[in-house]
Amino acid sequence: MNANPNVAIVASLVSEPSRAAILTALLDGRFHPASELAYMAGIKPQTASFHLAKMVEAHVIVVEKQGRHRYYGIQDPEIAKIMESLLSIAPPQKIKSFNQASQDKAIRSARTCYDHLAGALGVKVTDSLLNMNVIREDKDGFVVTESGEEFFQAFQINLENARKKRRSFSHKCLDWSERRHHLAGALGNALLERFIELNWVQRLPKTRAIQITDEGKQGLKETFSIDIYSAVFNCQIGQKKKPSQ
Picture 1: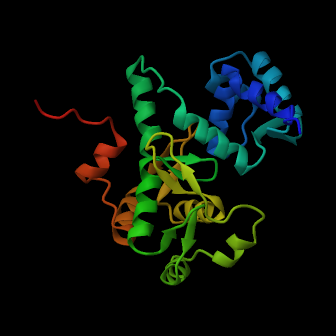
Picture 2: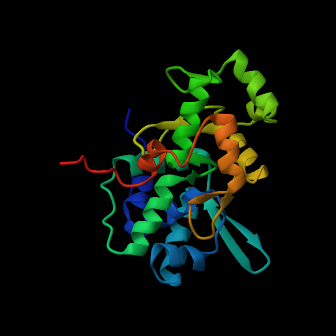
Picture 3: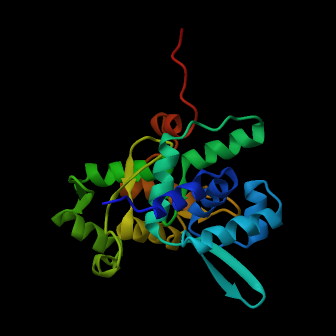
């Protein structure tokens, strides 16, 4: 049996730098107009429109029309998962300015990976859930334990609704900046939405980075035993410190 030739079409879309930049920007899980994606990718609006049309045709992204305006977003979570996996094996981006360094640190600290938590925060939350025996690892993902059922109920996350969604419930997602797995799937999305509902985190414009609020700092410490001021966490979200000579 011959391999599906359409694989080459998708691969060619991702291999083009401008399209890869657009897809990376869309990993925030939101819909953006072409002009905004052009700005984030560092290309002209006409060029962005050309690349967006190609990706819509290949069913990699979708477009929503609101009046005369068009907004673009990633087709489904599986595409976001593939992009995150590619980022985990890609060479690190060269930092050429202070502003770029600040943006890179913010992305590594706390961000969205399509529709769930990622970066140092996402990994730390996953570690906390494992340490508290709320979830456990298996071969393909994470499994909610009996005590985890009680935890999520108390945290006001409806597991039954999350399980009904036509997607993976709680798979592992390889975090490109931490090189470790974080919780993804419908459960990962429910956790992010709950954090936003509690105002623990806030989305930031034109970036996947998210801001941890004062309420979030307190809630993360009380519920997940995560102290974002601790030396361990600060080391993870920033550049690795060189050992003393």
